[in-house]
Image (cartoon, rainbow, N blue to C red; front, side):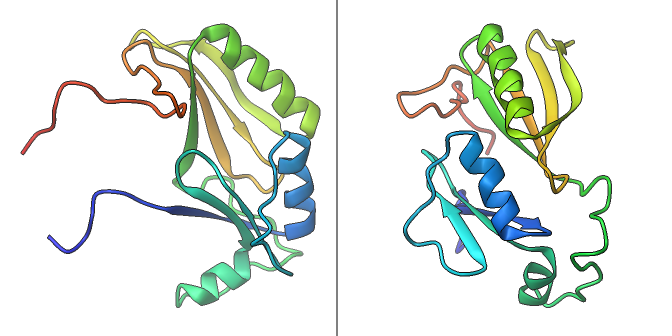
Length: 153
C-alpha cells in the first residue's frame, strides 16, 4: 500500500493566527522557529500542530473559502483532537490551565461508560480538544497512547 498508517501534521483553521498563537503559547507551548508570517507551527511528541487561517486552509485544499475573519466558524466541524493523561487528576489540572489560557469547556470531565474519564474544551476558534484518562491505553515515554494487543488484518 502506498499510504503509510500515520499522520505527521494537524492544521487547525483559525480566524486570527496571531490570536490563536497567543492562546497556545499561554498554555505553555513553544512556537517553532519554522513559523512564518501567517502560519504558526508547534512541535509535539506526535504530529506537528499548525495554525493557519480557515480561508487559506480551504483555498489550499481546493475548497471555497466560505468563511472569513468576520464569519464565525461552524459550531461543530466533525473533528476533535485528543490529549491523553496518566491520571484523572491530570485531566482536571489540564482543564484549569485550558480555562486560564482563554479556552472554553464544552463538556466538563466525567467518568465514561468505557471506564475512563473524559471532557472536552474548545480553543478560541472552536477547535475541539478532548482531555482524557484511558486506563486501557498506557502512555509511552513520549506521552503517546499505546494500543497494545495487535491489529486486525
